[in-house]
Length: 265
Length: 289
Ligand SMILES: Nc1ncnc2c1ncn2[C@@H]1O[C@H](COP(=O)(O)OP(=O)(O)OP(=O)(O)O)[C@@H](O)[C@H]1O
Ligand SMILES: [Mg+2]
Image 1 (tube, chains in turn brown, green):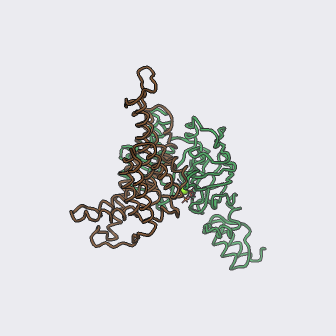
Image 2 (tube, chains in turn orange, yellow):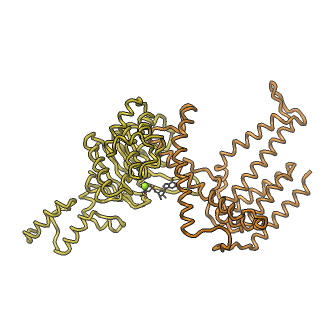
Image 3 (cartoon, chains in turn red, yellow):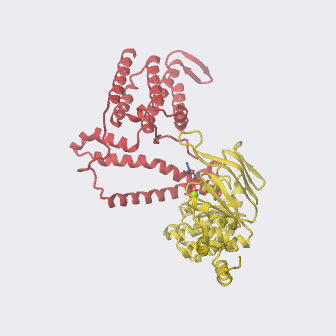
C-alpha cells in the first residue's frame, strides 16, 4: 500500500553515484544546499536544474521512480508556489480577479522558491537512494570527527542516525502489514468520512508503537550481547576510500559553482 | 461462498525498481464448504494468494471471483465490507494486530466495524473466547498482559467473532506449543464441520494438511505445483521431497516399510491406524500381492 514512497530508501545498483565515497557525497550535498541560494535568475536556476538531472541520470535509478516517489512532497512545493503567487506584490500586475492580484514578481518568486525546494529534496533523495545507511553514517562520523575534541557525541549521533535510517523501511512494512490485518477486520483506511478515517489511525498506531518499542529493546539487548560499547577504540570493517572519481565529481561541482557566481545577477 | 482465482498474477510494488513477482498463473477453485490446505516453501507465495481471497490485494493480472463479486486490476472496488465480513483472515502472527485496552474490546472491534450492536458483539466475545479455549475472566484484561500464545488465541477469537462464512488461516499455529497447536487445529476443524465453513489453511505441517484437508494445493516459486486430495498428493512423495517439502511421518514410514520388504502396500496410508492395519496384513499374509 505504500510501496512508492522513496524517502530514506536505498536502491542497490552499480552506478557512478553508488561508487562514490560517502564523504564526498555528503560534502557535495552540503555545498549544494549552500549554492542553491546563490542562484537568482533563470540561467543560474537552469544550470542547477541541469546539474541535478545529470546527477539523477548518473545514479541509474529510473527518473520516473524518483519523481513518483516525491509525490507526497509535491503538494508542499505546489503550496509554496501558490503562497508566493498571492503574497508577493512586486513588478507589473499580470492579472486580477476580484481581490486576487497576481504580480510578475509573485510568479517569479514562486517559481524560484519552489524550484529551490524541489532541487534540495531531489538531491538529498539521491544521496539516500545511492548510499546505504551504514555508509552515510560512516561518512558522517569521519566528517564530524573533529567535534569529538569538544566532547560532542559524534559516534552516538551517527549510530542513532543509522538506526533510524535502517528502520524506516521496516516500519513501512510493518505499517503495511497491520493496515492489511485491520482492513480484514473491517477498518476502511481509504474512504469514508474524515472522522472515521481519523479514528482508523488508532488501530494502526497502537500496534506500531508497541512493535517499535519491542524492536528497540531487542536491538539494545542484541547489541549489548555482542559487546557493543560505543565509539572508543572501535575499529571499522569497511574502510572509506577516496578515489579519482570523487575528485572528478568535486571538480565538476567547483566548475558549476564558479559558473553560478559568474552568471548570477 | 465460492471463491476462485483465475490465472492470477501479483507483483509487489509494481513499476518500481523493487518490483517482485510474487505469484503467477495461479488458478485455484475454493468451493463452498471445503477444507483446503496450501503448502509450500517459505516465499512460495502462499500469503500472497490468501490476501486475494478478501480483496486486500487486487491481482495485477487475472481474475478473482469472490461470491458474486469479481475483482480485477481494472477498476477500484467499492463496498468491500461485505466481502471482508464474510471472508475472515487470520494473518501470520495475528497477535501483532491487537490494540485495544481490554481483550473484550479487541474482540468486539471486528464485529462492530461491520455494524453489529455493542451488546451482540460482547455476547460474541464471550462465545468466541471460550471457543479458543481461554477463560472468560481474561476478557477484562489488557491484551498486552497476556502470554504470546494467549494473545494468538485472542486474535483468532477476534476474527471468529466476525462470524465469517470463509475462514482463511495463515499458519495459525506457528510458534505454539504442540498441545496448543493440536487444540487450535481441532477447534478450527470443529467449526468447519459445525458451521459448514469453507476453510483455507496455510501450513508447514504435512500432518495437519493430511489430517484435515479435503484438498491440498502445493505452491512452488509462485506457481501452483500440484493440487489434489491427500492420497493423490502423497502417492508420489518423491516429487515433494525433491521440492524440499516434508511428507507426513506415516507416509515416510510406509515408504521405508515398502523398501525393506520390497513390496507395495495396497494404499497410501495417512493415519497411524491405517498403516498399522496394512502392516499387520502384510506380516500376516506376506504373499497377498
Ligand atoms: N510486502 C511485500 N513487498 C515486496 N515483496 C513481497 C512482500 N510480501 C511478499 N513479498 C515477496 O513475495 C514472495 C511471496 O511471498 P509470500 O509472503 O506470499 O510467501 P509465503 O509463501 O507466505 O512465505 P512464508 O511461508 O514465509 O510465509 C516472496 O518472494 C516475497 O519476498
Ligand atoms: Mg506467509
